[in-house]
Length: 473
Image 1 (cartoon, helix red, strand yellow):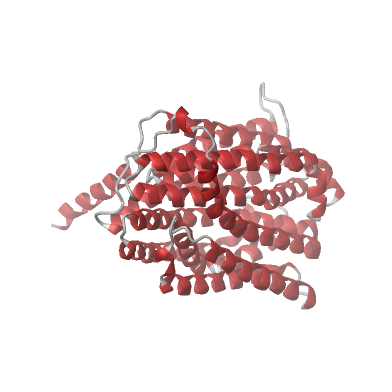
Image 2 (tube, rainbow, N blue to C red):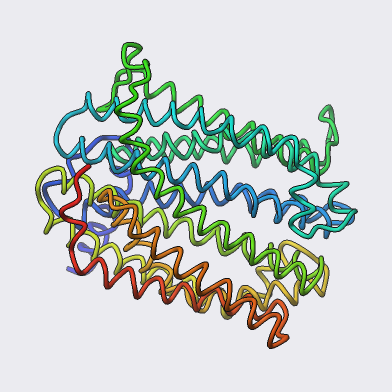
């Protein structure tokens, strides 16, 4: 009897995985909540796992260049600054997911498509304001981040290309948010597959220059990443306009709609500010590590952070499932089902992050050695990964609660929570431990999990109050 059940269970698991990756569109306001979470979460986890591959791939290949410390530091510092671009992208994506999922729950595809198109217009206008200064002041950006003259000289072309490619970064996040809001998480995942795999292929070719390819070094990593994301965006746009999905973008809808754009901005602004607050604090933390520990500590910290991001983004994928379920169920006038969906998602995310925590605490050394052979860099990176990884369970729970609030359209509350916990708590604590108590980079490492635990506790308390159920979008 056991032998009969086992193949049946395996077949069922394989069937669910295939179903989640098929690209079919489902109504997540009815049926099993567990199944809804699984069908959304699998492609969302894979999507954001592949987004995290971008930074890890770049770090891996440039980490094997001559004088790799400068290259690794450049990638790390640039990623810290470009996280501002990510913040804008995530803020717009959050607004798009909230509005599209709400309209999807109301069974109004025309309104959902209009909200998505106006979000894209806002993204294009915003990119102009970000990318042009980034290209012009690339050297000054690295200098402000505490980079050495050698890092500035070698890294400026990399930073300039990455900042110049801001549009594809913002669009790939935003359009995926549109697809997720409509419940088509598989389409969002496929666009990241294309972008990430192209980056993996192009990175070594453009960095090292085998055969007919030019040897571009560090600059090649930036070009490969930008091309990969650009092709992913073209794939997204094709499927938005081909008329085969719930969301059907039409040429007649392309005209900017000031009123609807303003509705998107009202949700996106706090969400963008929320992630600017987050990324801004990470920039300050990177600066503290760089100034208290030098290039070696900065390189170790940046490698550790790339690995932290690699495992946080899949958990964020699960959190995005909660945001979609909240938006669609509130649109369908089912707030209690929305709450149950979030609590169950938080449970799953906590279990996943507990496994990652064990990995970081006990296997941090071998992980860091994959990216560098420098003993000092390995020492700092190992310590950073162990300390930051110690709070991973709380990261997972906090992320679900914050994204659930965002998915309801209440983007202001998570913004205030982020401001308090990062700028009034985490950054001062990092300064205090690193500078006043002379703990150096270790003080910054410790401040990270302490602040994330506080975020999880506050966000969970506010979620249980239930005010998010009454938000109008």
